[in-house]
Image (cartoon, rainbow, N blue to C red; front, side, top):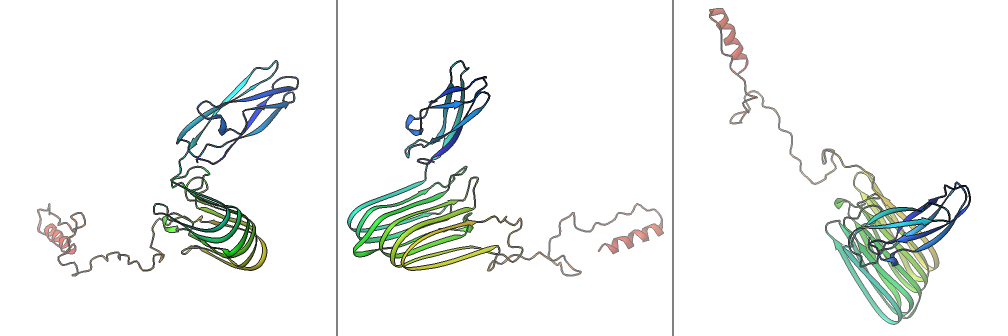
Length: 328
């Protein structure tokens, strides 16, 4: 996605009988040079051996959606040059909200994001009156994310907050509804912090792509608080549930990580095993009993057929009449 880093591994093989200094260079083709973390590098490769070097590509936040190609070239003294072309696809974000604060004074931040297509809800209500060196509150949404890209992720950071006239007070929540293909998880943080030395928090939700039905909440914080509460839960009806509730009052350094997964497979016949409380399911119609099918249409292929007698004799006609009487 735009602004996300994609990693490649560049491997170069020396087919010669002596060691070689291989010079690597990037041909960006349709990509801007600044997307690549290096443009040229040198590798010392022993005879008959190979060496690898990581390459990171970060499309900027305004990159156009589509397929991109680039080429890596390798040359060396008395060696046949080599090159390889690779490609990647950039997905655009459906939503990006980035907030950065640094300074002294009073701040009020309110964010409320809902995606009806994916059942994702994120809400933040943060205020303070004090001094903060750095504060970051970022949210991103990609409804149809592919590969290892999350559908929704948050990046929160606080460095050196000190209250002057009021604490750093906030309520932040996130919900992923199982009904809309999510993991059935909800995380709520509430806090009133006098001083926060540092805090780094990340949340990522995968509803599609190769990591679908997975969410991860991770936070690391060092603070002095009146209270700091983490309330996390997951509920998948008839399958699994999780509840975690933590309260911190005082001076602490905490590290928390919770991974939510939903690996259950949908039933081929939903609501047939009592898993839909409150929903009335039609009963299977009972077959007609003798005399209880008045005015009920019976398909012709199910209706009894009258046997036409091919007989010429009286005894044969009597047998056919009995057979027709049995079918009534």
